[in-house]
Image 1 (tube, rainbow, N blue to C red):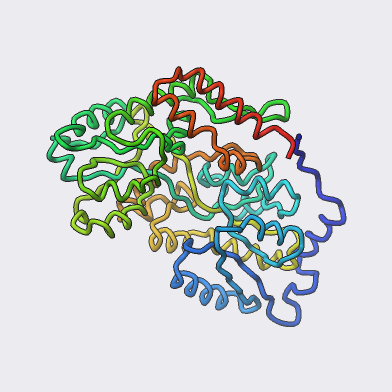
Image 2: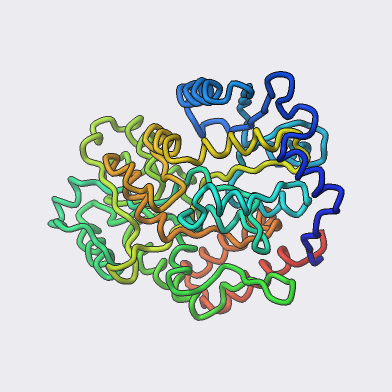
Length: 419
């Protein structure tokens, strides 16, 4: 079924314009205006939220903030409830790859003008900004990013005589070959870590799926995507990662904590899990960006993180814009990044995390960050996820092109069939 993003009716546009000018009830005339903000559990600390609220309300005496913390489980239905008018929220944090499915409802406020004029859209991380842009209109505003890096054991690197961190794929393979052996695993890379594969595919100029003629088609069987899978296969062989499981089966942080794995690929936040199991590794853990094909450009990475949206039905658009303006501005971006070890929403702010080794490595990779295909059906892809069994099939010896064609056909079916 083809999805079209319809122009908003004139009456709705007029309503939004009046709201932006503060002409509707609740716009601040005659008292404080209450703005409800939904943030996701774990995205910001209680201390950050408290400091932000006090500072914002001090600077905006006519606005009262009501920040409510939401669970990721079941959040899609809750957000759709707001967009349908069954619940109320004025600013909502959503996953960057979720914006497309919400935009399909025509329930989001367009923020293109504010992004270009006030929020520095030209410097936004592509992996956050592009999923929030539909047909040239911006609906999701980048808030923060996180992506995968190489987490490594400094002691094992020293023991193997690896004294220089790799900056190219060739250097990475050579170092990992030296690290693999004598009871060590050069790298623990499970066979179904499809996020990592996506980066290798993008590095080769390939895509997971492509859109054409109003339809999405799987693209794992293109020469570029197959080259990405070939590199994954080469790297995965330099360790004992299971070929038929992902990075959470078992949790790779626990495997690394045993002390005989030289590298894993994951977000720096996994270090807390490692140290919970092996406190003695505290001073032995380092980070570096996933290497690219050349030293001039780090490897592409899947960019996770969050965007901020404003429902079209809000009666407090002016005040909601003020909240977003503060949250995406340099001061609170710096505070959030430093406190939560995130990557800020702009490439021009990467320097604010230079003192945090994990976040700094993420920031380098985030400049080459990408997101999953910009379709509201992608969540259904991940639920069925034909990419995982495709990877396992190749790693177990099946012809890559045959396995890729089968996986691409399943992707096409999921992305293009009627709901």
